[in-house]
Image (cartoon, rainbow, N blue to C red; front, side, top):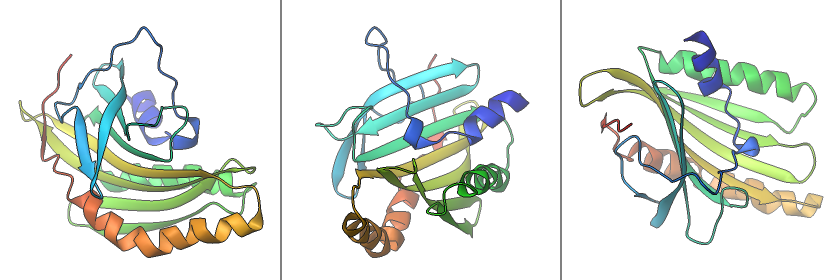
Length: 195
């Protein structure tokens, strides 16, 4: 179980998984083939059930692929009574390690009733930059089993010069509060696990 938790908590969007072309995409969590966020429709593009009790789903805009996207909605769920705060703290520990060699990496933590939102910027130390909002909460499935659920928004861009950085960080400043509210409105009050 500990290994499963670490796998869940350590996920970094910069290393997004590549879907096998023979794999079929399945809505394991029963949350729909599409999700609406910021007046855009994101469609389920990739999903996985890597181990028992652990599910991952990635939603993209129509023209995007898992390997090449600008915006993504990610939903992960792991069975168990796991604290959202513990999940966020584990992610922050990962970010602290990365920041030792990459000063651009930064984060903010927001605690709300029964959930935690982690707002962070990460980069590959070259040209890939990401802004991520991670919302951790506890949700019950249709059989009342508890799951730690991660709902995330990721914005990725390729930046080559210092002039490119300003619009990227301005986007974060202009949208942070509104996007956190919108992420909080994604209604996953119950999941319906399908194997």
